[in-house]
Length: 141
Image (cartoon, rainbow, N blue to C red; front, side, top):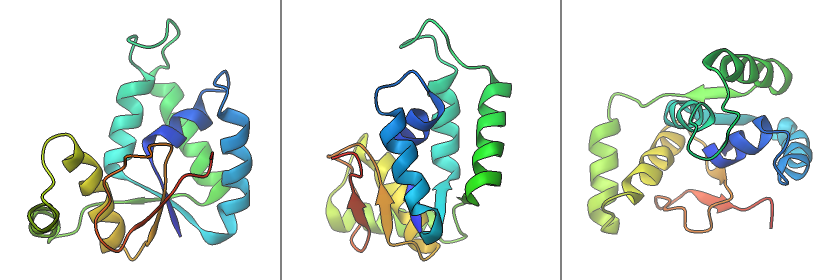
């Protein structure tokens, strides 16, 4: 199974993005392996997609919901949530790897993935801060 990071969800959603076609093709090829994302990614996706900060045509909440529903129906996308021991595992990983500030966000996504047994994350962020045991792949490079 592969966890999709927020940037890839946004590229799939925004058909006007230059990355859209390549991400769509990569995700189609990955469907047999199983696709997932985390609840953190869903929140971030909706925040960015509905923001006017980077586009003059933000998506509505309904647009985001329709996109995510369609993606789940077409690809079998699974949404991963933090487990009961999330806080402890996240803080332990942060302390062991000396992660602070904004990178804690990435680390949280990675901890959720690992807790669900997922060992691969796809992103377009070469600086993604993954916990030990999570392989980060850049499918657009």
